[in-house]
Length: 117
Picture 1: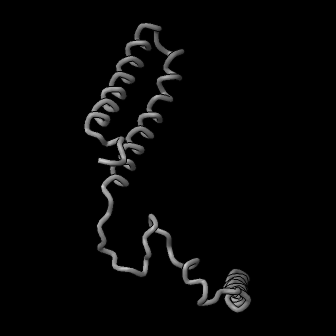
Picture 2: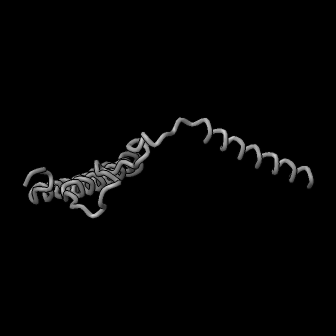
């Protein structure tokens, strides 16, 4: 028991010593304000946080997420090819691709894919 406590205390002091050494030896300065600040879509993090945000960024992100998830759903259809008969596989794949194309057509009609209005 005493051995475990002494090893624990040793590693505690060793880790604290290493953290203090890294803080002392690091070349961080206050001149690197831009490097140390987080990058959020081109906005200055030190400015006012309630500025207008372009809706196009949001729409393009949502479209990307939707199609990304749908691509992830297509992969199991490929493995399903060996498990079911050909007609069932064709119907399932065709139905899924038709849903994708209808969604794309709807986004195109709503001008979500155009950057300018």
